Amino acid sequence: MTDNTIIRFNSVTKKYDNDPPVLKNVSFEIERGKFYTLLGPSGCGKTTILRLIAGFTEPSEGDIYFNGRVINNVPANKRQVNTVFQDYALFPHLNVFENIAFGLKIKKMKKADIERKVKEALRFVNLEGYENREIKEMSGGQRQRVAIARAIVNEPEVILLDEPLSALDLKLRTEMQYELRELQRNLGITFIFVTHDQEEALAMSDEIFVLNNGKIEQSGTPTDIYDEPINRFVADFIGESNIVPGTMIKDYQVQFAGKLFECVDGGFEPNEDVEIVIRPEDLAITAPADGKLNVKVDSQLFRGVHYEISCYDSDGNEWLVHSTKKATVGDQIGLYFDPEAIHVMRHGETEEEFDKRLEAYEEGSYEN
Amino acid sequence: MRTNSRNFYLIPYVLWIALFVVTPLLLVLYYSFFDIEGHFTLENYRKFFTPVYLKMTLSSFWYAFLITLFSLLIAYPTAYLLTKTKHKQLWLLLIILPSWINLLLKAYAFLGIFGTYGAANSFLEALGIGGRQILFTDFSFIFVSVYIFLPFMILPIFNSLDELNPTLLDASNDLGGSSWVTFKRVIFPLTLDGVKAGCQIVFIPALSLFMLTRLIAGNRVITLGTAIEQHFLVTQDWGMGSTIAVFLIIAMVFIMVLTGRRKRGIL
Image (cartoon, rainbow over all chains, first blue to last red):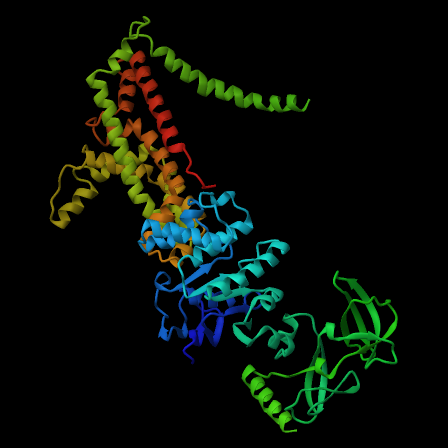
């Protein structure tokens, strides 16, 4: 644990009555001043983690540390954490100013100070001059900003955001992604952001925790997680992927779709069964003779930026290709990819084992 | 054609209102201008402003106020606890159930309970406090009235508490609010409409209670309701009874306007 750690979960389990646990033995650390995202499908436990940090619920087992102190039983109103709720939870009987000033008034701050701070917070979220508006007069995007202002005005050490963008339309959502990221950089406060939207997670985070079934499947930077997914779930959940079974003949040589390919992964048993991931955008369409794989075009969708082309090889594996070039349905085409595009996943490997193997074979490759 | 058919369906409703709401009101107003001999007069209105009737008005308001206040003090925490229970609809039903039983029956039941040899006095004696006069006191009158009105106070408050978005309580807690602050600044203001509705439903009928004043309070409490009943059934002075009724109606309208105004921002 470094000095920079602000929140630490130590083997935290959360159970409700006799139901199976929502969180199973989860441990992680959150560092000061970074943008974290908890990513996962609904019911994976991401919101539970947020509620545990906020103090709305207590862990069944394990400890939560905040600045090195166990805070399991510290009530929510005594924590240096503020939340931006999914439905914003703005007080409908108070106007914008009173909503934002709510926390400051509880702290018995002087009136002049409250006014100054609320103005500052409104400037931060680009809502200057909206002090006297009623909440019901505000649009969804504006309510969102008020909710953020209400959280940051208290100058918490950590801000928790529970799917705050999910109610906004696509354009506004993209806009708010930029704004939130910039806000976090300007304030230097730790943000913990919960979402089920993988694009949002990739675009905004310093660090992503991918959760599934009450467990952290993988954590790392967006590029780590996108390029080196640890298992089928992560590969499938983050972005589109082609996942096919294969065999690791030896290190740096893998067999799939009935052919041998060179790759950059190592640290396997000889002839180990593995899964291969190739991202659709790493596949390039070529003439059948120039391709590493020969496939037949099955269907094609126009996605705006690219065509999404679904092809099948002679073994019956589906290959999804993202290409700006059009293909003709029914044609036989070749697919080309670099050895770096192949990512090999071991069956049932945990994150720890994965990291260890990665370190080991990377060291090995330097010696070569 | 379309508006015609719509108007056609309105006829029963309009007839009903005209026959059973507007006509009685006009009749009450009409009778209030006649004395006991049937001569047109304004004497009734002058009489209303004599100390006898003013005192009666004051006492009506005072008792209605007490009944409303105690109902509210009991109903709010009850409704709050109800929203926290597991089978809240069942509990709610149990609380509403007594209101389906005839008022008179309940009043007679209390005559038995509060009587000199009733259950309440036996209980007090068993405690060693000793029996005492319970029936025909202010206490018994207010107690029974509160008992009868309680479901009507609980229901609207329960509804407004039940509709309250629970994330708002989390939000208040999150922003540093203790349970008390959350109650004072979030829960109570947001359920004020329910409280107002409950007060309206209790206060207005409580103004004109007359059965209970006789049975439970033993005519020691004379309210405007009792006075109207006496004038119509005993003294046969319909004019004076109507005049009191006119003032009662004015008071009710006034209270409706006072409590009916909705607070800003609440949908």
